[in-house]
Length: 353
Ligand SMILES: Nc1ncnc2c1ncn2[C@@H]1O[C@H](COP(=O)(O)OP(=O)(O)O)[C@@H](O)[C@H]1O
Ligand SMILES: [Mg+2]
Image: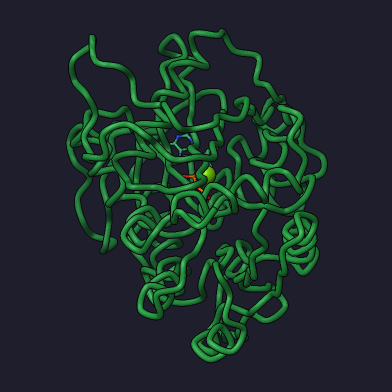
């Protein structure tokens, strides 16, 4: 078996730039040293070399010095509306292989409104929505309350709380004002889906036709082939229905250890099939590679109809606590194995094995 030199590219929370007036949750999607150390240890356990490099502008020099065969990329970036795509763009320019999705997918999926336009074009179920760039834009007629207000381009529940659920014009404008002022980006307003919270993780690559279209003919084979689905995970929000009510920043950070994660989620086998197929469809139309996690809400007022909320092509890989890590564990895949599944999927894609 060949050995590889692997640079692990991440943005550590402790190295994040200090920003005057930034929101309190500004850097909540960045990684801890323990996550990066666990990833390096996992890579070394297969006889490979691993070295962490901070994924900021120094990368152009550090990556050239280190001369990796491949980079294990989990960098979220710091600034700009394509921050997750910036390091991959540099690596493309330097012609260095890297794990995970490429520039277009990472820039697209960071922007939830833009992603939803693509999903809607493909007829994939995602809550009706409207994007607000200014506070005084009128609400579209079809957008009936309750609605849900969130930043267009954040993760880890940033900007999301119980107040994100708005029931009238007053609450809507207040929340819009908060998002526009604190996050300096358009606000995404969606129909509020009262329901169960399910997320589906997968590792692999689609091996069917690569065109970014979904087969419309029922007789054609479904498109999942090549993807390894983890068991779906449900976050039990019952205890928080009167406080948080949604999988928000507080639950994803401060209270993460108190939450009950049900994995595999207690849902019917047909529902698991349906969610896997939808997740594969989202993976395909957004052009994801190697790994992703798709978040759903199942509408309790409509027979658990699944709605796609978003796709995360850089899902968290913190040992024990990240959603994808919990899902893998439920399938008997430990953190080390999960990291190497992602790495070897990428190496295989680049035909380096
Ligand atoms: N339209 C919606 N209806 C109900 N809850 C929502 C809606 N959009 C988001 N949420 C809640 O907010 C959480 C975070 O939203 P999501 O779009 O997945 O952003 P993040 O990138 O922060 O995970 C979801 O897991 C869900 O609990
Ligand atoms: Mg999410």
